[in-house]
Length: 113
Length: 112
Image 1 (cartoon, rainbow over the protein chains, first blue to last red):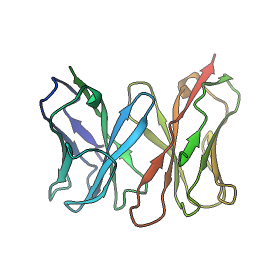
Image 2: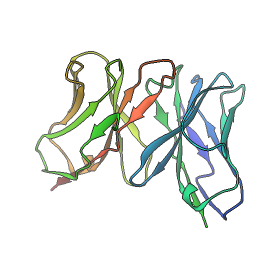
Image 3: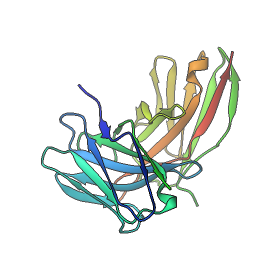
Image 4: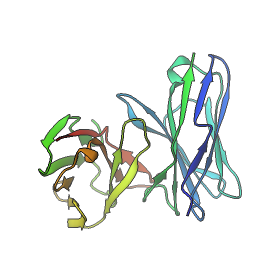
């Protein structure tokens, strides 16, 4: 089976812009979780989607949003980018539930200038 | 108080030794426990999952779970330089909003 794919792998944006990241889960996996990872902060949970519905949400401002499509692919959007949004954004897919085994994509490295 | 705690390290062991990584958690209702390995610049990779008290072995890796004491550990036997990475502990939370809670990770360096 193909693994989790994320596009793009690298992004450079300026403050105030918006960005959309994409994630394709492992075939047959229905849950997609998104994380932000920065040095010293570890993995910070953004949200989880299952069957096109947001099932869980972390403590991030409303500038961070996401959605899931009927084929389980997911996108996350960050609007009005800030310098502090520079991070590695990871998505992880699970078979059914976001609190069970998760398999990560390679991540998208976002740099905000 | 952090919900999942790990020593940040670095933990340094000689090649061939046993590396012992520990993780404590605060949610007594947690049912699922995972160890991930993350190489620098890469994404986390699932190594082990454990759900019941006791030991679970997979090759050179052994996960140990003690729910009464609320800790989970990972032993790496015959450590190799290629095991040098950050090891992340993840624990499922109880309650309605079920998700994984992550530790900050322990950096392991295996010296040739």
